[in-house]
Length: 409
Ligand SMILES: *[C@@H]1O[C@H](CO)[C@@H](O)[C@H](O)[C@H]1NC(C)=O
Ligand SMILES: *[C@@H]1O[C@H](CO)[C@@H](O)[C@H](O)[C@H]1NC(C)=O
Ligand SMILES: *[C@@H]1O[C@H](CO)[C@@H](O)[C@H](O)[C@H]1NC(C)=O
Image 1 (cartoon, helix red, strand yellow):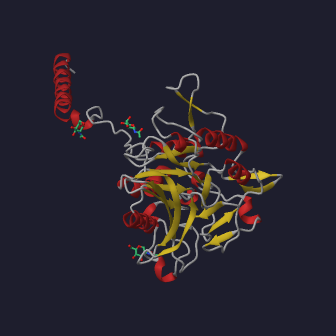
Image 2 (cartoon, rainbow, N blue to C red; image 1 turned 120 degrees about the horizontal axis):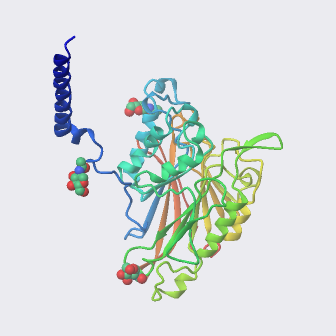
């Protein structure tokens, strides 16, 4: 082995490698490096949420989407003739059709958005569920059911992920104004669950309520499962959540969001009506008889054995006119319990259980402003109906949930 030749070989080899690396760096690095790409920020809807200039605000409720892995996930409880060509894609298609037909201003997903036990990757499945709302650039929000956390994310992870998705208005924890410094917002830490938050819908543009909240939406985490005295049962809304809700509702009375003194004083003294959204029904829906019921009651109400006083809290608050729940897919009724309507969305997703031959369905909620002279005022009326996933998207069970001045105001 001659030392001189080996040295030259090594030198040439190193030069060659260096040249290759230099060329790669020069010509390809911009394609390989992430630094040159724009960072994708969350896309936000136009805020604040507000009524349209025609005086309406429309919400689409999607209950129990039960999404799995997309096209590979088969439908449950469909006719034998439908089974071969049915998957999660049918749930997506239904949501797209509903958005196109109703053109909602907001979509509320009331839990069991994904069916964890059938889901390989929670993140991917969540994109499947909320994709149609995001593609339509619609503001949307979600709460969790009892099945969402059964795959690769726990409830806290799910809510923070969902909160960061495009056009999502979901929040993991409520943020409240720090009274010592109104410009700062701090998180409320001592509240049970993940996904308790409030969204405010402002008055119509150009009206004297343009800078005030005229409709409140309360979202609550009703939990998943629990064992009480050794017996398995469903989750429930805890006292800490109800405390937060009561405080929030009291704070809504006479609020002036902008500190604008010119707004009509009388309008500010009225607590705006509110709607609540959560997944698991409350015991009163099973125990008590309804003053009025519209829609199908064809399944046992699967609520928690614990009654934490949700109904009494809502009655004492006075602003909640209707509550929208899911969980029991074969129930799609609205039942009136002493002035508050409790409405099931009706099973939406094809991978959730249902009844073969009975179309999946979705609920629509329409809030309408009253007119004072020429200008829009506060909410005058709230109506609801459902649509079936049949050829015509048949509209069923339309009725009024609340009219100002008729029931209790
Ligand atoms: C990156 O952002 C700039 C400025 O907003 C934009 O002009 C450009 O098209 C973006 N590039 C890509 C690859 O999205
Ligand atoms: C599911 O979607 C496929 C393809 O669009 C369609 O042919 C089929 O009828 C749908 N099934 C149901 C039950 O809606
Ligand atoms: C609402 O706020 C906007 C912007 O601050 C202001 O121009 C407008 O006059 C306000 N309207 C009312 C009714 O207070």
